[in-house]
Length: 332
Ligand code: NAI
Ligand code: MG
Image (cartoon, rainbow, N blue to C red; front, side):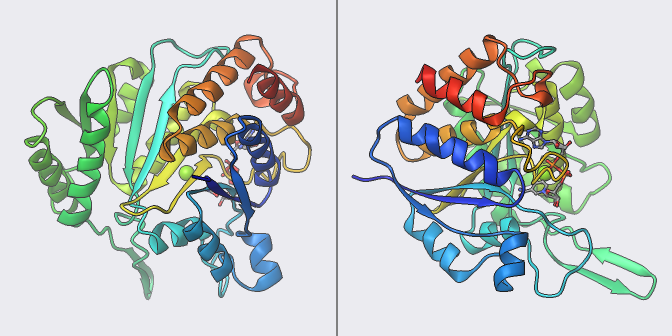
């Protein structure tokens, strides 16, 4: 069966790293059929829509989408909606998987192999915000349904990993209602998995332990905003945003894979963006479409390139996006 991959470069460095990742997918000769779609700020400026219907259709038709990044304004712009949030909502992509593993880059501690499983549909990103005079209110929505399904996702994944440990991360000591419910829901799901160990940490303590002893962790499950923040922190442990991949998956076929970083306007257009976050996201896509061996081939090639000291500027080297991509291709 032909695998269809929809490429959505988006804005800024997305336009540099997605073509790099696509070249690597092509090199594997899996007969992947590529489709192309637009999303993001430039797309909004051109078409008045940051996530056109045609893009949604293209994602629906594909086995997986590879997404770059978008440039989102920090102030409200009439008609603009963040395409990543809209994609997650449109396809109910409730799980955001953000793995962090030790890589052979300068300063990276050894023995890290953790996976942040971030609830992707509610929490503080509920979209329920309003102004009441001088007061701004954002509703932090937590439901039993979303909490239980993200917990199941975390426990199912932990089952497949050597350590088989899930850490529930929350702030139930202060957010007694919302995180109280999240914690309860996760602990209830934990009872269905007697073969997986389970512990819990308050989110602030977790932030400290991630720095102090990241090797203690396996799978961590948490609410949307906490997952957003702690996954960037985790990426910082192993070399930064340039190498961090992620997956957005749900119950259906639609899924998209993206480097954790944004459009990086400070380096966009210079040909120096690190393509590895996008390349490792392509490997996660291959796992999703049932090509784990091809995914491992990509990971081995990336590790070999990094070991050889071929590093972009964010990792302390001076290699360009193209050079790193060519070295990965050569090792496939
Ligand atoms: P950013 O991730 O774009 O950049 C943060 C820092 O990391 C910058 O110094 C940048 O140069 C560096 N960096 C990022 N990607 C890199 C790469 N591939 N290689 C080397 N260095 C890299 O985050 P920032 O600056 O906070 O946001 C810029 C824009 O991106 C904003 O408009 C923001 O809304 C958007 N954004 C979009 C995301 C998405 O599409 N999923 C995620 C995060 C931010
Ligand atoms: Mg983020």
